[in-house]
Image (cartoon, rainbow, N blue to C red; front, side, top):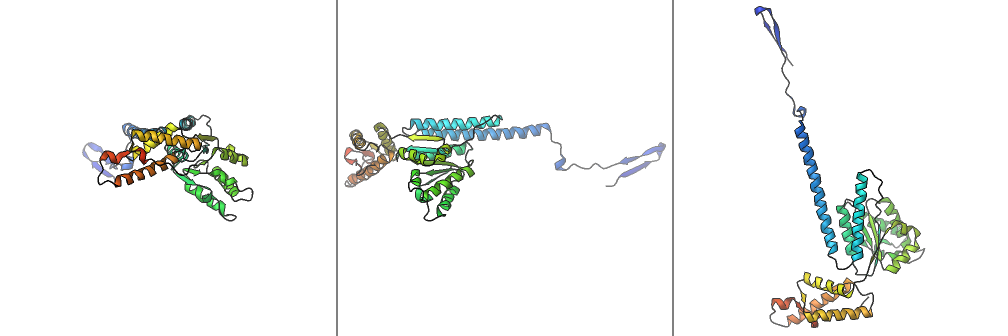
Length: 327
């Protein structure tokens, strides 16, 4: 870069040397404290906004859980798990000793008592709490895991685990994996699942579900399983009042309503079923009854040339249909 020198002969003054000033590039601009603090405040605001969003999502999921009919002990335990996970995260941030988050679960109960529904809510809850990356639920049973020849089962099981990574692998009637004895390929599926639990302990929750007595037997067939599933949740059968509430909720969602005599008739029918089949207290039974009832109401109204809005919505006692078969 040229330097300009000017000689001044007058009065024997020394020459003047002028050095050009190099303009600063954008990357060399001075960062003033105000700019730094502004960016820091913006980052903090974004973090707080994300935390508030997650908090709202968690509140919505818990509200969805609370909206389920019955299941009081199940709801309480899920809230305990939520509190436990949050406190362990706080302890970790404060550099305190924290318990490992082993969240594999056993769901015990009859079919139609809400096990799959709660599993889906668990997946969504732990996704919002940053325990799981995706929070989706992969539902499978013995046929999805057990193959037909040696080596086939392990591959099928690994395929299901791969689909579930970042979420929940929900295995219904899991006790069936141990029913075939030592030579059955179900044992191979169990071994593959145990390995997957160890290999993906921070990115997978395994939920095994089934009848209460059968699941207790299943846990005894493999002593190593019980220690890997610290959370056991029992799903009780619904009471007569809870079954009625489920029926009315299903009808309300479809914009139907029970007439007074129909509600009394439905109570009488459900009570008769429960007296005859003590393990029939489940939502699946009610759903099937409601769907058949709606079809029968449609046949009744179809025979008329016209129907009013109230007639289209109202379910009468004569529309109710009792299931031919019960669990």
